[in-house]
Length: 240
Length: 333
Image 1 (cartoon, rainbow over the protein chains, first blue to last red):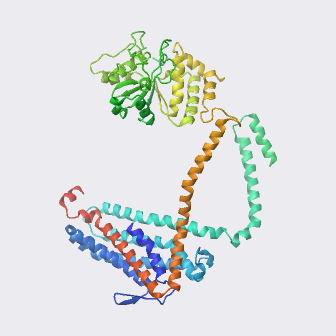
Image 2: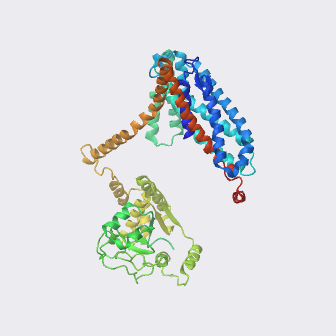
Image 3: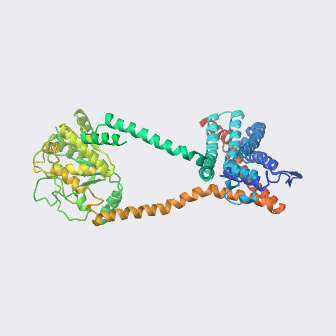
């Protein structure tokens, strides 16, 4: 749940911080003034390091094991942070390929320009998935490079399950949100449907006839019905 | 050797609400605990004794609880005479005559098995100190077969009727020694047992012959006529028909009332999230920078808190890290 909270809030943080909307907007924290994307990545890195350190401190029995793997952890967290940045870039790139129509947005569309609206649209669908995939990469790399004397398999199992319970809901979310938000746009008030309509109708009609005749032959030749039903099948075939 | 004189229907099922209702009705509180231990309901064939008040009564079932058999009629509150003595009559009629009574003389599983053995194999009652072992050895040497009819409501009953008819047509029905049914299969199994029991000779072969007839016999047509339990009386003006329709409409509407709002909410969720994002973006664009900055920072801290907790829990509970230095865990691992 905490990871899903992160996954849901990360896109919101970007939007609230004026990502792509006000690139010049910077936030003052820890004596630094940086844009929201920088802070998001920095906090992503810091949270994972702090989480590891807390785990180290709350489990002193394995202090040296944690310490031994700390450098590995820092490296894979850095890679995962890069992956998060990459995911955001991919989402941003995908948003440029969306049909630039302000009515993609359900509400307040008029308040945003089309490019920003498209970024918001893409982030709302893919943002949570991107955040959890970056975390999945972290687990995958760590389980591959960390040192453990025993229970390797148990570690792999644990981290795989941990990743599954976070990635699966966000993947479902991405699919479901895509269907709910994008399909209406594809099928309602769209030009391609109007263009296809004159040819689509006769095509469906022809296909229906072809399949009707085929099914009729199958019924007559391959059916195991009694006499009257075969007669009916013949009649149906003739009617077509 | 065959199932000629008796078919014993054994219905194994959990103690469901029906049984509990029956027990409550009988106010059988001292044995209330036994309800939970009821393992079987058995329908023995009935005697042709015309004086039997239970002849043809569907309530003639035995409940076996704690290895003790109880008659269902008793549980239904009927005051019946204690007539559960095993018949000393013709061989193989032990189960047959065990029909009514408050409580049977079957005290143990061995008693039941012995009576069952007598009924099927006739008079060759095993007398042995270790009866159950002797029984198992004996019955396994004999080639026995059971016809098992599974559940599935009226569909299962209809399917099982077809199975019974085909088995009868091929002369196989009487080759079975046991009939085990559950739920929907119990409808048709009970019907068959009832039919055989009603026959004064209790001749399963005669029933098999009747059942094998190609034309629809009275028993089957009667079954069809009385199995339309949802709308017993059909027709446009029948109250049963309209009751069925209205029941369907009512239940569909009730289901829709529950599920459709849930589905709507599900579809609404992505739209709400998008609306929230759009609203926040509009705030960042139009509202004071300070407010936007504050909102983003607050959200960032909340999100970071979640990520920190997730990381902490994930790393802390890694099996190798959690139990790494514990010698006992190492041994287990």
